[in-house]
Length: 393
Ligand code: C2O
Image (cartoon, rainbow, N blue to C red):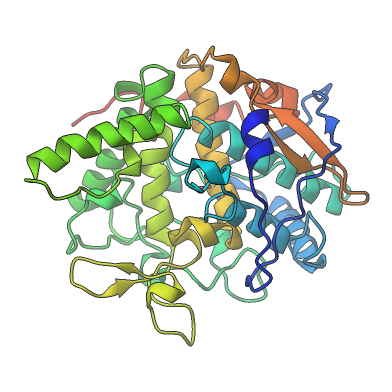
């Protein structure tokens, strides 16, 4: 919330590969709800040729802006990194704890805001205020592969080379983090055999679990309250497992404070898409972002595979458009209700809203609970026959 924002310490590291986001402006105008719904987000795999070209043109223009422009592609990626890679800290008296927009009830509204301003900027860059961010429709069988639009590596601004090549054209596993290491990769365009059908069914059940069975109530679906509550819970969990493991300190398990919207298909696909291995020309060590694995070796994940770098892959934003859509469906069609706590409703962040004349805008969580306030919606067709409304396992 405002209180949290005021305490954050800004990113100042001059040696970052990506620039720091611009410092939080002291003066920001308040967000005004949009008067009309002009943008209808569509599934990426069903876009017309014309729309595909429009999307590419917009991204190319955003990538062409100088990195110092707050709405350049580099700055957008840096914003995401700044909010999740330890660049903002709480008041040092609170042990200099890093501030993160993941692992709590901040996740859904913050990402909704972030891609809303991104989408708006893309529209401005191509002079089309009806331009809507296409979403990666991974909850429908026909969308359970990285959309072809993102895969063509020839002069395609939507392409990113830091993806895991063998998985590019394979049927996704929405429960990838729980899959055995030797689980076979299933071609998306191969025979629709038993293996294929089983994984599709399992995927639909993962979404059913995330949206319905395990997503009852705001805390279960959107995550735990940030700050002391989350920490308290973590401490409790640690204490408990410490006792169980005979005094050994358990690893902090941040997933405990995540809602099902964040913890399940969303996270699985980050890891599914991102290329594992050190940055090009470097070895994977603690200094290059490696995480020590069970085998005693360091493991590095790139772009989508690591929160700090995931905004560098254009697919990230279409991935999050679907996360956003599943929140939208939860709170409309499925009747889910958000938090009533004013600390959540009045929490606010500042984003830039105008490519020609970047202007800081303060927007609150309560402003974004209904997508119509933000001038966009999702195509009605995609909500008609949701294939995961029941689970047949
Ligand atoms: Cu900010 Cu999918 O993460």
